[in-house]
Amino acid sequence: MNTLTIEAGKNRGQYWRDLWRYRELLYFLAWRDILVRYKQTVIGVTWAVIRPVLTMIVLTIVFGEFAGMASGGVPYPLMVLCGMLPWQFFANAFAESGNSLVSNQGMITKVYFPRLVVPISSVVTSFVDFMISAVLLASLLVYYRHLPDFRIFTLPFFVTLAFGTAFGAGVWVSALMVRYRDFRYVIPFIVQFGLYISPVGFSSTQVPEKWKFFQAINPMAGVIDGFRYALLGESSVTGVEILFSVASITLLIVSGLYYFRITEKTFADII
Image (cartoon, rainbow, N blue to C red):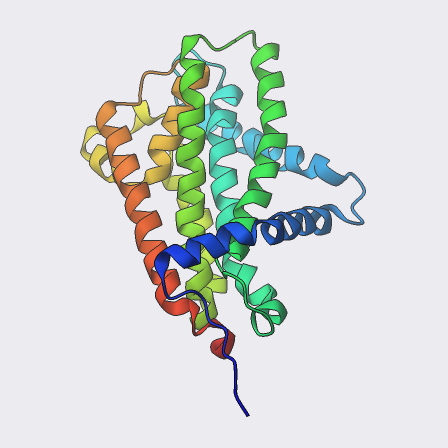
């Protein structure tokens, strides 16, 4: 009796063609996750707005009122929200991607499809939340009469960087979670720790010069500063910081894809 074994395409080009062929599965998984997230909730998608609002209030009180940090002439809640949105997109995508393969183990052990579809769908789901929260930011810009100038045209570039960071980190942690379940405890710590070392609740202008290099290594620092540059005209972002962010995000994506691909064929056995 002959046995037919179906494997993920060994040829790199074949794998990416398979990924395109299974794009409808990606749409289905993303839509399913969106529906499940807000199913049987009283206020539905409003949670995508409530979470950044509550976090914005807390960070404004802690850093703006208690610590007395400057905001560069920009209303402090507005500055915080401009940093909160890209950070929350990254944090949500990072956490959701970590559990994505494990929570879909039934599919992974039964049928063939490019497993990369699963963490990508988690990032797309988090991006939908990001777009909903962006409506709140737009409303706040109008409320404070702080409308963006020509620099708003750089925003798509920084959104792309945010998506790349979320994707690269998500691919890494999803593959690691399959083999090392300890990461379910590590992920919340990374998210909480990253919130305070990233310039979310404060401006990068408040970071001492001796720590600037370490801040530049953090890819989300450049993304957050870029959002504030595009929306608020804040000039704290520099060309060097953007280059560091682009380089670190590129490394994150390439290394994540490499690790994911070399471990992908063992997922069904381990999971």
